Image 1 (cartoon, rainbow, N blue to C red):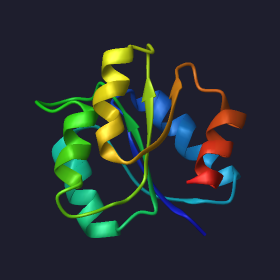
Image 2: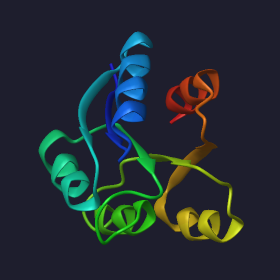
Image 3: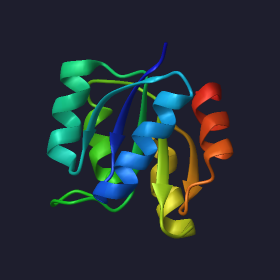
Image 4: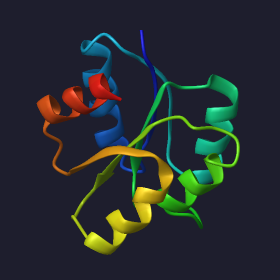
Length: 117
């Protein structure tokens, strides 16, 4: 069973994502809202996949957070974003990105991305 870390600063969206991920049969090891907590959660839980919002609380965005995580882990990441900025996706390519989805979440798309990661 895949262990998933959710990094999302919108509490309701994080809760909905976690419920859906659990319904798919995966385990949500933690749900955090900022880069510092995400880095600590990766160290603590060793997730199999990270669902990372691009715009999160704190000084680092999701891509910067993944660049820090890359210093000690190659865990796959699936980004979520409110828009599909091409510059953002160019930055994200350097982080072993397995995919991204544009909010609102299409859960069939998310399930496909998780299963393929």
